[in-house]
Length: 198
Image (cartoon, rainbow, N blue to C red; front, side):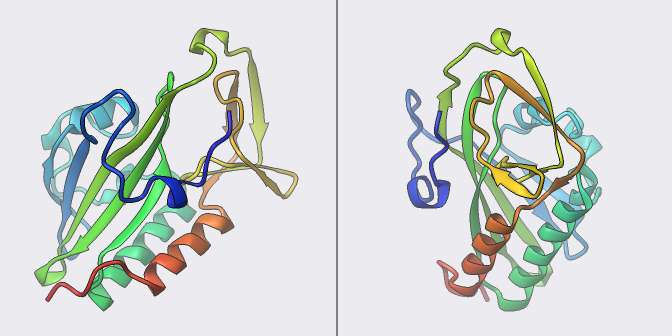
């Protein structure tokens, strides 16, 4: 199954195939990137991300990057947070966050607030069942790296789209942000969609 370009196809959409509206979970970070508020389907997100505690009281006053795997991904997010606070513009970028049985494209929207606070909204923009049932998974493949944002996998220096994920489990040596996603983030920062929030 082909993974379409999420920036081209999905940003700005709020409809999900077979569903009435996008799921939205919101976090608020203070000026030190500590989580100070949570709303929306937090438990659903936690179940899909094993590193995130199920109970909300376990995340308060924790650094958001405590729940982010991979040094490169943590550095990527901190750079975006810094940019949002410095220039006062909102930032939006799609990312892929599959369920075991479902291809899902989500959107991360970061809105700077007064006092260095950031509001981060995660919305499910698009989902589609895998062509094959999860029970048909038969192959475990080692990969050099996997992108935390688009889920591309790298073998021998070349990045590949995550085709056929319903039949393959990738075991990356490292989770990073691929060059394409970093370039997409730079473009989003250079041409923000919303004016400064002062």
